[in-house]
Length: 636
Ligand SMILES: [Zn+2]
Ligand SMILES: [Zn+2]
Ligand SMILES: [Zn+2]
Image (cartoon, rainbow, N blue to C red; front, side, top):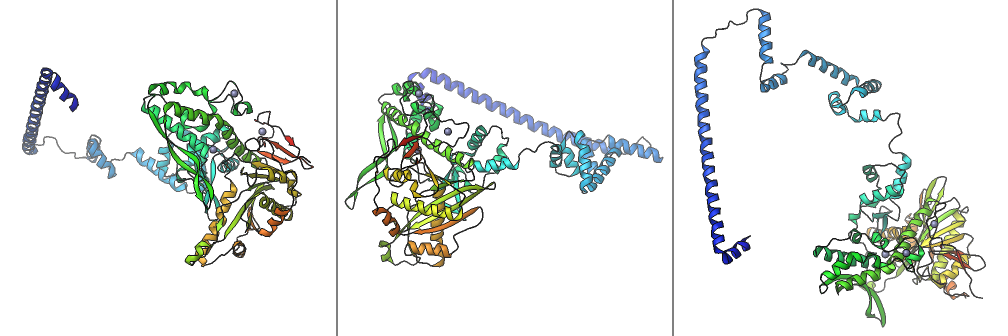
């Protein structure tokens, strides 16, 4: 405004002066009006005072002659009092009301009824009767309940009598189960509370409720009840301040789309809504997010170019404008002890708008497959849990980060010679007599290799445990991440083809790459938390794996009864070394192992059966028809 006036003064002085004059005149007029108004107020106030004085004077004068004769009979006295009361001003009647003077006969009767009713309301049978009677007539439940001094819930509760209750215990179970569904929660990797696993929601609660409703259309549960039933161990999204195990593929796409969105809104262009939602973004580039042809990018009709029209205007709007965005990149320029170490690093990238679009298109090319594997496998995990048969058990396995032995009063020098301990939790879930049991079989070892042979021995230990405690279970449905060295490469596949030489049948399922967070992570947090806390509290010194194992067993860490159990096993390095030295013939790579195998089992006689996606859907399978079992024959 100021700049505009300055410009006006320089360019068109006459116009400026005319405006200034008009401004001054308007201000003068306003001041004059204010003056007149305030004078009028003063005058009226003075007039009021004079009028009051005059009235007081005339009152004194008129006090003396009262021409009417005062009521002499009791009847006329009462009549004149009633007349006075009834003709009283609202303020006066309020005061009379408060002092119980003006209370009509009906009102008194009403009060008596209410008093009597309130007293009898204390007897349950009478109360039911009264409420039943009132129910029909009481249109204003709030007012009636206030009068009777009872909770208005009585009416609502009674009025639902005879109808089916709004929510049932089965619904509550369903909701609580949904709060443990891997699609909507992740296990906190390094946190636990009172020995139970903590989970954190991936989406806002409102969105989770929406997802629940779409997945369970027949179930009626309100939003507030749904929120109320959230278990205490499931934390809200906002609590996950810094999540340590992010997927770089998802994060990179998120950062690119956010950069594009910001740049678009800065240019004043409409932003497509799917830029906030990775799933919608990826689904926008395929005909069918479940069809193998499309997610493998062999379909000729779909691809990232499908969404290009939304961005053409933005790219052409300011071609020379650069945009900054961050990306996670694997770098290997660091050398430690003569070895190249590859590390994930956050790099800031500078690019033109078309380069940014190309980055997005390139990432979107492979993203639908990543998305399909992740969400699909998590979905299958929850389905497997839901459709569990009595002879089956689900087992989630994973290596935890090594625990470093230490003591409460370590000497400085020991910092350099600390022993590490391998922790390999196997969380078994099985159902018996309509109850879901959970048994955490935690294996502790001093072998630090974390390789396929270690896994082989751990599976054998697990099998022995199953035979000892649960001989009826014949099928083991194992879920693990797709870590190549441990579970998903030629050697572990060869072990699997031989069914790990155990009596139970193994059906091995792999989570999508970089998204294998499950029960096992929470369990390892429980073990390590317990060890760390007891070291601090009991002034212990734990030197190696054996110490840790003995301490945990002696402190009653194991729980052999109940719905949630826990067992501990110690596997020595020597045992694994025996396996390592033995010959394993016919080890060779199975084609498509990285992204196109997510379920595998032994096909008998040393052959391997595998398919792209796990399928526990039972009757209504939504998988691509190409998701069939294929057999791999090992040479020799
Ligand atoms: Zn991801
Ligand atoms: Zn397609
Ligand atoms: Zn299926």
